[in-house]
Image (tube, rainbow, N blue to C red; front, side, top):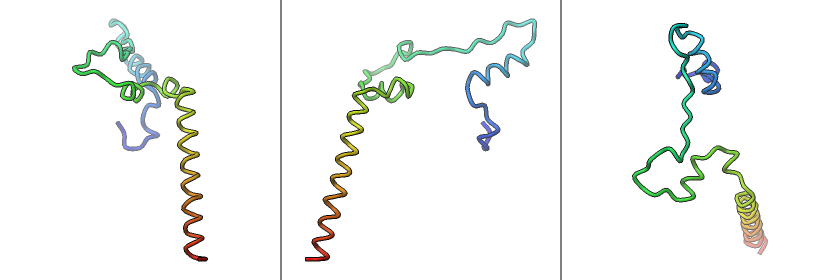
Amino acid sequence: MSINSTDRFETVEEFWQTLNAFASPKRDRVQIPRVMIEDVKLPFAMSDTERMLIQSPQEQFSPFLARRLAIALLASLELLVLIALVVYFLLHG
């Protein structure tokens, strides 16, 4: 929880290892809790888009998303070319 990011733990596993290093030998070691989205009971139905937002980056990136990203980038490029042409013709009549 430090303001400086270099003073914080990089991963949850690193935090749990440090916590266990200071644990009393008489007590059981603390286990890292594993919570999956399927384990969480939600009071509402979650859309595919919302479910995708809480997945890990490896799970989020799929060929479908890669295709959508390529289409969005191409559309942005076409829009920039169109704006450049309009500005050119406005300035050069």
